[in-house]
Image 1 (tube, one colour):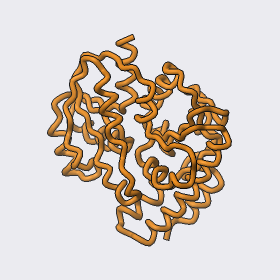
Image 2 (cartoon, one colour):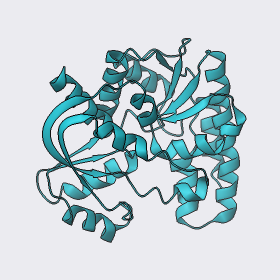
Image 3 (cartoon, helix red, strand yellow):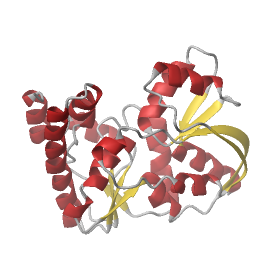
Length: 265
């Protein structure tokens, strides 16, 4: 059975770990507005910006520079993927996974209702793991559900960056268990193609960073010292694996977009 203590904590506090006051303080320190009327509502995810602050700061910089009217929710509810859904999926526990999907719908709808009340036109999900639940439950709202890449693609003018990178989109194999709706996988590619001077090596997206052998194959296939991804889970797993192999840098897509915008402006 799913841990009732985690479910209760999310229902009362929004998060399954940490506390909401610390979360708000970190987001406010980054300059985010919380709970105001805006065109775009951002769902940052339960582990962001804690686990990838550089990427989240770059995302914030892009939002501000491109004058994208946005806000975060005052009472954002975690969908419970990491604490409840992922363990059930990894254990092939179909009963618990079905229960998690019901709970995720409950929390996602709470967030939809808040965004609607703020007059938002859409809801943008920063975390790739969260995105699957929001897309799967898009029938519960009139808002358009976007990935971070889809939102940025509407505003990003392009930039310049004289460098070569390895790009790994992620395999998203867990996503197929959550939703059968297609992933907007082309938006990140179109964004990268707007960067003049950027040379891209495309990595095998059938490999999974959660599988040790696959993660090693990814590392061995690198042609540069810079890996770019759009998935927060890949960001963490690849970073940990590459620490054993020398000096590499792993970046989320917003970091590269921001660097290219500064260089090209």
